[in-house]
Image (cartoon, rainbow, N blue to C red):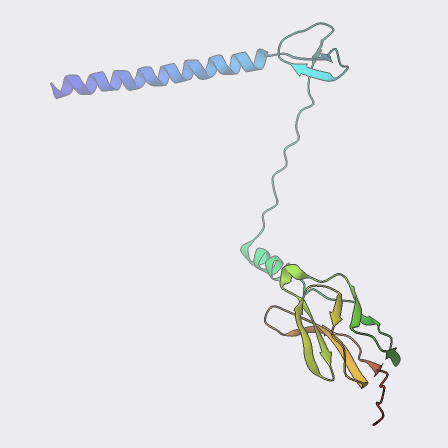
Length: 191
């Protein structure tokens, strides 16, 4: 009985091979004889089809050129990946544009500071603006190049802006500017 079963299995396997071979031959014959047609549709667009249609002509596409990819050794790939690391982001221009250096500011209720930064602030890397007055941060983690500060005390003050990364490390700093805050003082006389 096992001999008979193995014979049947062998015949089925041979028939499957024969069926696969016949199907492959039919497919190759069909695709080899398939024609392509090229023509224009009603809208004037070029149309390609495997079925002939009105005003279509037989079309034979150009053969494709196939080129093997060059062999690259593992050592060469490692050298390329080392060189292709993302370059550090560099700012080329960072300044306080308002107020100007040595500018006197009279009786203003708020000090407005405007900055110029090129290229723009890299917020994707977590960069933010910090503003220091007299060496102490008065604005931290600001997302904009313009900021309004409350009324500053009378006298000369040094302003400096910084771009810091998400860890608080200074990426770039502006030149310092000196502003002179002048507030009119009205003295009362004693009665």
